[in-house]
Amino acid sequence: MGKITDSKQDRSDLEQLRQKIDDLDDEILRLLNQRMLFVQEIAALKNKAGKDPLDLNREQAIFRRLAHENRGPLAWGALKKIFGEILAASRDIQAYLATNDQRPHSPDIS
Image (cartoon, rainbow, N blue to C red; front, side, top):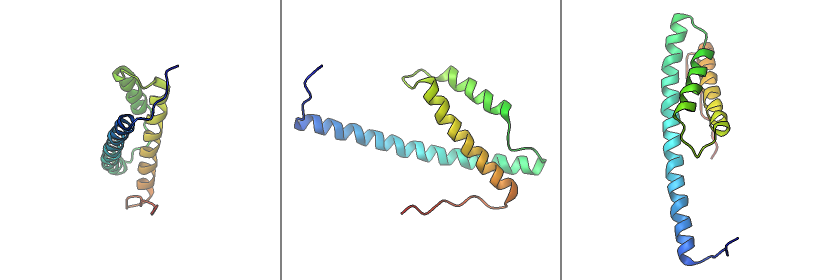
């Protein structure tokens, strides 16, 4: 195993990489919220048509598409867990909107 160094350059590189990850996290959050806005629109259309919020065929199609598109290094099991949570959040929003005429509120975590 190689020697672990703690040089000024290593710390600078680490800080830069962490900043890149933070920037990506911010972008992922923005995209997730954008996705949920589309989910709200879909929920409104489903409610208007009297359709069930749960569409297992659609969820299975999403997983098939993601499995095909994934080139790694993210493992399929991790990808499935992540998108399973995203789809669960989408279902929660749709179910909430099916019984309420307003969007869910964000908790105050300050």
